[in-house]
Length: 92
Image (cartoon, rainbow, N blue to C red; front, side, top):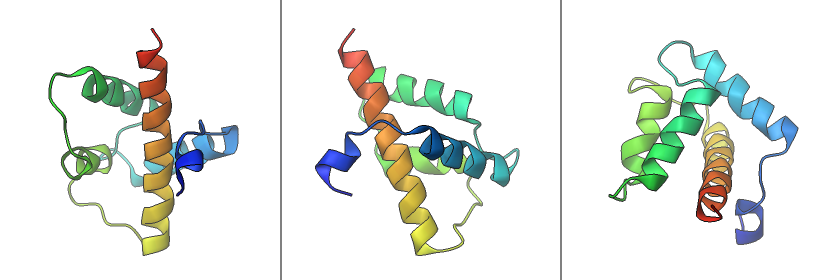
């Protein structure tokens, strides 16, 4: 993912892909609304939390991706969504 791509908000299809992925995991994963609140809390919090700490909380500790390609796609979507939320919060 290049820097230009990482700054693009999720398109409707991307957002649906991310929401569908989280829904497919089941109860162990956050839904998209919970994810939004989680990202806001992490971004606004006083401490920097590394992705290695917060990502497993999104899909549950026992989750594993089906492939490296799936992992790359979902993490890119998450990072773009994070960047969009962060940008919106900084503008306020």
